[in-house]
Image (cartoon, rainbow, N blue to C red; front, side):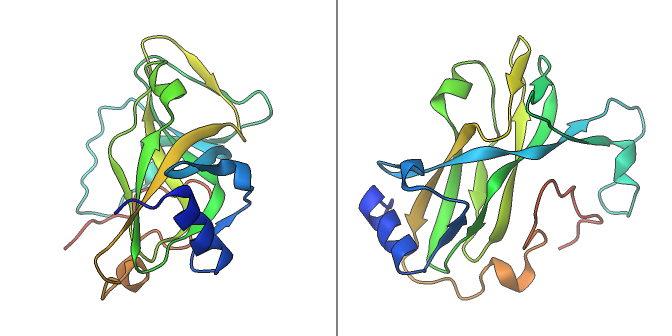
Length: 180
């Protein structure tokens, strides 16, 4: 079941879920709008092969930067990582689905399907893929819509048990090596 605006307000008011900073204007009919944080990571073009099963210097593959008030330009078809300004704490009975706000999708930007697991705490990091033309984005602009789905019961082992990105703030690059 998808949480309505009333359900979202109830979770927040009862302290079952947390979003900071937050204003009620961010609540939509069936989700919450979250804004762009000030850090980004550009994917570098390189011929060096990254082996996901080994530790490696990820700065060979990413350029991390901080946005000022002018923001940054996402170049055509470029892949970048952005994060939310908001820190989110998910309860054990809600899962979040992240969607790009329609206005950004209509500009040709794209994000891969992203799930925020039950029990996750942190700023959300999102991969954004550029349009066919350059697009400037700025910190504080609403860019994703988080929809909450209630699970049939609280999860037995939430994200806090083995979540690799628990508590993240800003851009956190992939944790390698990736293992089962």
